[in-house]
Image (cartoon, rainbow, N blue to C red):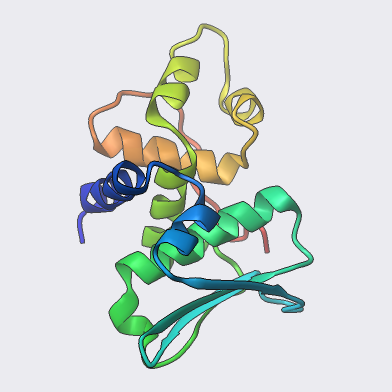
Length: 169
């Protein structure tokens, strides 16, 4: 699966449903989403008898819940064939060693962060990576995935912040 394919999937969803909110997209796609105390898990997703289901840990902060929702939605959209056998549990959603986790992270970054907003900030003089993340009200790791996605699509940035697999652990 090409990284540009992930961006194209995200853009198609946003265009079709006129939203980049993962919870609104879940509603539109008839994906059941529930919050509960998942203890050590941030979220999981599964497809049982054709019913798509996402669970998100209710103990997460709202911003983190939205990132986890987008990440799990990415699994449903990109990896539905792998979800029919068993639930996909995410204790550490920013694990870059696992291909499916990496792809779900790219999906979440492309869904939640707008190219134009990121590009506008990246072109400003004197702004660093962490300041960009604060201006965008996002986690630096998610911004790292977004910048990587944009670089793969031809944007030219000098930021080099490797995503850490321990993020949100």
